[in-house]
Amino acid sequence: MPALTKDMVPGLVAAGGSCRVEAEVAAKFAPGDRIVVRNLNPTGHTRLPRYVRGKQGVVEHDHGVFVFPDTSAHGGGQKPQHVYSVKFAAQELWGAEAPSRDHLYLDLWDDYLERA
Amino acid sequence: MSKHHHNRPLTEVELRVKALESLLTEKGLIDPAAVDEIIETYEHKVGPRNGAKVVARAWVDPDYKQRLLTEGTEAIAELGFSGIQGEDMVVVENTDRVHNLVVCTLCSCYPWPTLGLPPVWYKSAPYRARAVSDPRGVLQEFGVDLPPATEVRVWDSNAELRYLVLPKRPAGTEGMSEDQLASLVTRDSMIGVGLPRSPNA
Amino acid sequence: MNGIHDLGGMHGLGAIRPEADEPVFHEDWERRVFGVFIASFAGGQFNVDEFRHAIERMDPAHYLESSYYEHWLTAVETLLVEKGVLTRAELEARRVKLAKGAV
Image (cartoon, rainbow over all chains, first blue to last red; front, side, top):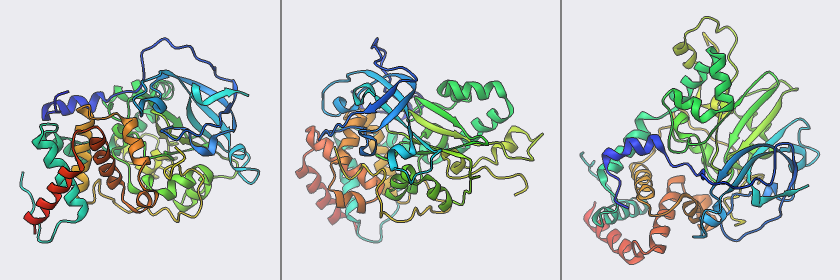
């Protein structure tokens, strides 16, 4: 690819580069589904924080199909799949001392989840 | 462009940066004029005044607010803001019952087109560690006291969705123009660690 | 990876210390790192996932003690060397040359 030039900058800034993928990929989950986060511990790149692994949550929204970073970071291709906004109770993640009415939301790929 | 004169030896980091940039330039892989333009854009042209305009529009226009909450990327683009690190936006609304807080525990993901580049504290270990596990403590540290019945929602930007908080419109702002309303919207209120200013504050 | 970057829920990291009226960049070298990163990324030298993972692979103590844009600098150096765009020897030789020439 040629080097970025000055006149290309405004267009690049305005367009960006979405990681959304135009692909027909079946979603494994739907809003309302109760899931548990898989206990994955890859030594490579992942966007699955440790604090949420093995925890139960509810799928709130399907964001659509995106590049999967766990493969993309290692030359393993895009492996496009659905990403969901998943809602967790604060107490589920941090224990009974956490405020009972608070929640955390993370965006999790299909491969990170299984049905509860 | 004039280079400022160094009266002292360059630090190790400065030497590393100059070495990297000069080698990449010589190899034709980067163009310094493009680098200058990128810097100029993010230092002077993109910033939280963009997000403030989005918030002010949502405060005065209920249809726009609906679009903002359901199709954030497109609604934000209506006002001319789009692009790098804002390609897929989600806007979350503060109400009398819900207060939202945004973090990226894994790195520093932040909605650049609406808020500009993130402040150091947002990218640093203390905020990233505690925003998810003790958001109320973090809010207290920022001077935000929430009514006890409020639900706190923390959004960890671990994927490529970028989050913007739509703060509650302050009381006493009836009849204010969009520009006047935008001037009340602070960057911190759009991250969720602050509240908008009150009029005449 | 279960690296130092995965900070959610960690204790003992101290107070959040916002700086009043913080500038976008604190040093000129930070500006240059930012611009060089964007230009390199736009030029297809690496993708964002590789970039993040290069930061995650930093020595943990170095990660916690260094500033944010030094993370970016380290990651770009690492990736360009791993991809054969530059060599460590080239970078070191250029640093030495610049150190002698400056002052």
